[in-house]
Length: 150
Image (tube, rainbow, N blue to C red):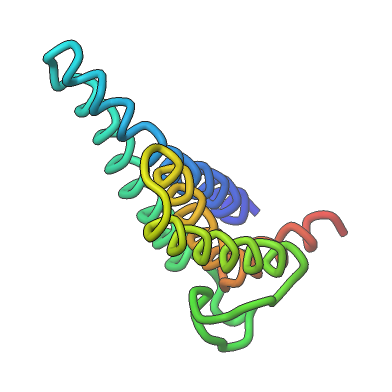
């Protein structure tokens, strides 16, 4: 039981870190402007630390979940990045991902400025959560949470 709670906590922290990673893209142009305005690299260091810290911690925890996960609990299937529309939440995120990817590609052609960072952030967020929500770890989390409620 304690192992399952560790997995759920690791999953939640991992998801938070992935969201923080996507958010860090919104901060990049702002930190760059602040660094130029105040002639200091501190804003860049802060945003870079958030980017790299959330990337490393989020995906390290996700790997940790893969190691701890009971492999017998799930059928063999493709990785989440390749699977689509496996559940309701994944379907919503998959559609959002496709819309934001197309919008970002069009934005690269016709737009410029901060809006591109917003679109990039949304793309990164949706791609990550597409992989998470269609993946085996999410299925396992649902499986163990369902078992705890019964």
